[in-house]
Image 1: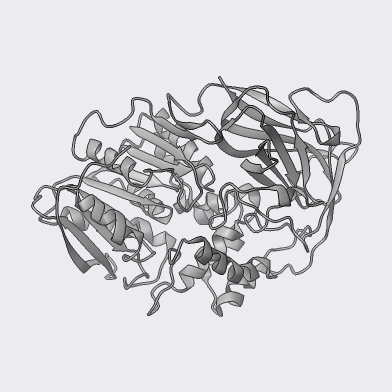
Image 2 (image 1 turned 30 degrees about the vertical axis):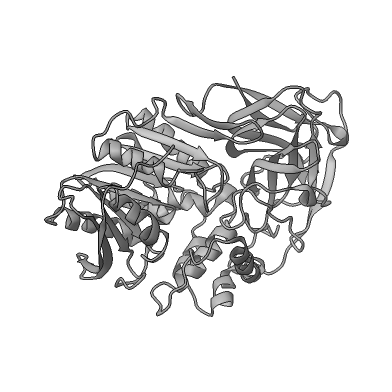
Amino acid sequence: MSMRAATNEVKVERDVPVTMPDGVELLTDLFHPVGVDDAPAILERTPYGRAGISGSGYGPVLAERGYRYVLQASRGTDGSGGSHSYFAEVGDGRATADWIAEQSWFNGSLGTYGGSYMGYTQWALASTEPPHLKAMAVALCGSVRRFAWYPGGSYALEIIIPWDMGAVNFNKPQPATTEDSLSPEAIARRMAVLQEGFDHLPLGDAIKHLSGEDLPLYREQLAHNEPDDPYWSTLDFSPMLATWKVPILLVDGWQDYQCPRMLDDYVALRAGGTPVWVRIGAGGHIGGGGEGGMTEAPLLWFDTYLKGMTGLLPERTVTLEVLGEGGGWRDFEAWPPPASPTPWFLHPSGRLSTEMPAGAAEPVRYRYDPGDPTPSVGGIGMLTGGQRDNRELEARRDVCVFTSDALERALEVIGPVQVDLHVSSSLDHTDFFARVCDVAPDGRSTNVCDGLQRFTPATIERATDGSFHAKFSLWPTAYRFAPGHRVRVQVSSGAHPVYARNLGTGESPFTATTWKAADQAVYHDSSVTLPHAS
């Protein structure tokens, strides 16, 4: 995939005020393609500052190729008036779209672009059904915002605390942003500071402990953590998917925390007849989507649906990067593609096999201590996610490991992944975490996909011996295990701080300062079901 050449010089207008219905002014930068009077407009609304990646990178790229790029600082950020609020983005987005429609340079066609929070602002605007909206390019963001905060019923501290710390500094004289630097060294320095917040008890004081300030959003995230809490209902745009008709490009990475929700969105949009293309590549939330996912692919989409060009898009609407040795980009008719769901069973002595264990055997036992929580290594972390060597993690006493024989032929796994763990716990409040890894001939163990589920007395159905089934989904994947490699499954009870450690007491996260260790057992009729590609 290559981007077409630039065709225009760019003229930039800075700090254009756009007045909202309540009188608040939002500062907006306009990138005009010189010599193009009928350029379609593309809107991106961001809380991260207009001088960042959008304003210095993709905005000029679009304008150089004949689009009028409109970059706006969200309410309460980067000089825009008011106070930042997730709940304001619906009205502010629509007011901005209406303002664009009134400008003399508007040609009647509006597109929207952006990833992560800027994907959320697109969904917020779309929910108002603006009449001129003709195309969307949504990356790293599903239609349900709260999904990312409570994966598996836990708290995504490695997402929540860094983002909320950035929000504390919105609209200060020299605001800190979540995009200051993405280098490994800068992330490591930042993580050293954030770790104190991840480990602080009670959780309710973590943001104040780090910043010296309180943040209402953080209190709301801890207080309203149930999946069906009506508090967040206005941030759930999934009901509109069944009838939505504006063409949408969806872009994500296999190790992004939003990936399952985005694939669910694709299924719902396609079922409703929406023109939709989903593109999932390597990487996590930072840098996810694979090469060209945030550049070439959106330009192809806008050229097709805003400029009327033809022959640019693949005929099949699912483009996936199959990870692993010998993988690569593939196009499929739909998600999930045809596959044979195959259980892999956890045998005694750490063996993993598609054969069911014969006879009874003692379970594998381990202790989970919240005082020394099992750490997250790679996976869906916002700052630390991706594929990593898991050997050090697997050497811990609180991580159970089950490994297959070396594969005689390649195994491709493409689709959703499910786990059914037969377990017991000494506590009624506990977590179980499972991860699939690829073990190379040299012993390196690379994470493929994983997931965690939090259990409470309301969700545990114990058998007479006290055991229960922990059934949950891992992240979907597209992965090729090469010949000579081995499939590995980890089972543990945490991945802190990507999933906040379970203190085991059932107390409110606002106030809990003590914990209980959990004695866990994993029985050998447990399994992970992998979608063997047809």
